[in-house]
Length: 334
Ligand code: 13P
Image (cartoon, rainbow, N blue to C red; front, side, top):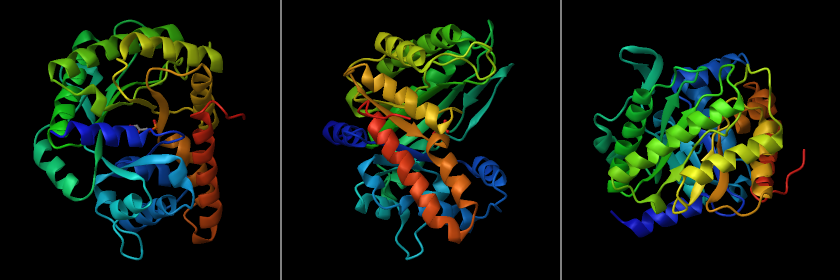
């Protein structure tokens, strides 16, 4: 393991102003996104859509990394340049989603466990050859009012995250550790904070047990936020305060960066929350973004699958990247 390389890649991804574009939607997920704009989902339409984002001028100022899906890492721009090469040449670090999705946890039908550890060592070696310098594994934690998540689901997911992270660091790939407490449901912000606390505590216990070098990883958590169906929504200030309180209690300062997922928040809300946290002063870690929907929703809406709309779509993408870049410094206003 080359600790210096892990550290420098992790730091570069969350350098000043920068965050991550999550463009690693699996086949079924990207189909859902394309269905929403009535675009046929084919290997070529997916390639064209991703090329549009990866070639947008200026976004390298705000993107330290892009997370790709297996298919995308093997694809190329229309001039034949592999996407990983294209991104690297622009100073954007290519990454890869390596989990195989969240499945029902046996005998716990309301909960999920992420699969994909079998054969992961071999897959990581290939991804490294193809140019990936960091990876992502997403654990999904369901929440209800009392019974879910169970301690078992939290432990099983934290354990899998740590096994994945160790396999990554073994081959000098920076692991992004993503324990996502879902914002579906009607639970309040306090419940989200309590569950997120339990999850992060267990995740760092497992990371420690697996000898993960904290300086060479990034954490991708949810924000502490009420469930989407909760009657009592929270202000931007409340979300920022609760999220930072929870993270400060559970995330060691050795971790170089927190890169939030957007998790179903609107693009503007996700940027607002990030901005509010960065306005609350310097934190022990960089406070950044790794947004999927919150960066791409405006792009999809402008593009609609039409080549004629490519300029507008790129403008929308640049604007979202720039606004989140401003939010990295607490300098965004709606
Ligand atoms: P969202 O920002 O759309 O939640 O996606 C981020 C991600 O990569 C989830 O794994």
